[in-house]
Length: 130
Ligand SMILES: [Cu+2]
Image: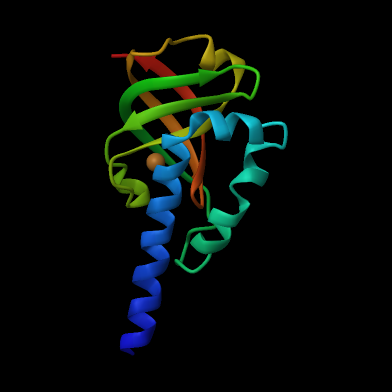
C-alpha cells in the first residue's frame, strides 16, 4: 500500500518537474517543435495516464502572463495561476496555440485564456488581455 502511494507521488512529482523543466528551457522546446508539440509531450502524457481522467480533455479557464510566443511552432508560453478544473498548480509552460491566439497578444501581457487540457498538454483556444 505504501509502495503504491509512493509510486503515485513520484509520478506526480515527475510530471510537475517535466512541466516546469519544459518552461525553463524554451529554446530546447522550440527545437522539438519540428515534431508536433503533442509528440514532444507524449512521454508526459504517458505518465499522466496513471491518474484517473487524465486522458479526458478538460476545458478550463486560466489567468497568467505571456512569457514566450513561437509563431512558427504554434506555441505560447504562459506563467499561469492554478487551474482547479485540472487540479494544476501555478506554473509556467507552453501550450499549443493557433495563429489567431499568438497574434492577439505579446510577451509581458497579462491575459485571461480558455484552454483545453489533455494529460499534461494543452491548447489555448481563446485569449484576451486583462
Ligand atoms: Cu501548466
